[in-house]
Image (cartoon, rainbow, N blue to C red; front, side):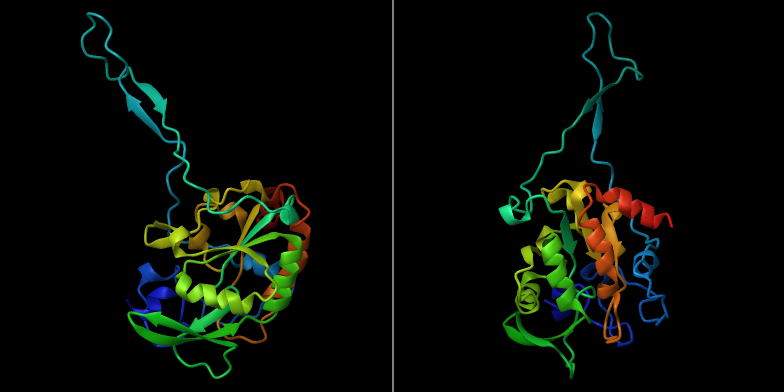
Length: 276
């Protein structure tokens, strides 16, 4: 197994290395460009809505067309005599357990890991916050992890306001120990990894309908639009982060999440923000 394949994004676009697109999130062509952005709390929200060439799946309400039973002495049915029979989706086991008593009534926030909360690399980083050993094909590799600025404050506040779930397209052998070191407060009530994603047209997609939560009360925070292509109306996008220690995006988003935590239906708020 290629060591880069355990992490959805491991390299800054400035570095001269190529990672297979089937093993990482959708690459962002302008992620290496530094742009001066307004410090308005909504500026990071708006800047990340952009078009990606990933098509959403077919609608869940599938139908099949079957000819009706042939009437007596009527011969073959006509082509326009078609009976539409709905095929119900066979629900798989939900990804999340039942809501705990402490989180009852709270909205659910699904939070990405790589390039949203941290940046990881197999190349040594002198100022790494964590160094995580990961065994791949019998060899132990060191993964160097940088924490995004203000991530500690962000996680603690989110844990107070929401039922928080870590959902990453990386493998558990890397992401689980990183989450252990990152989440010192037990913010994440559950952790979901690559096997919980849906592989759709070359991308690992986080299907929020499989969580077992009411979608109008679910928010996803992610730097990759391809990750939430099934439910873009539930997304609070963030810019990809690699090593800018002056970044304040997580801090800037807290007032928005404080408001969303009080909403019974997050769609109305997120839609109104996208319309601005």
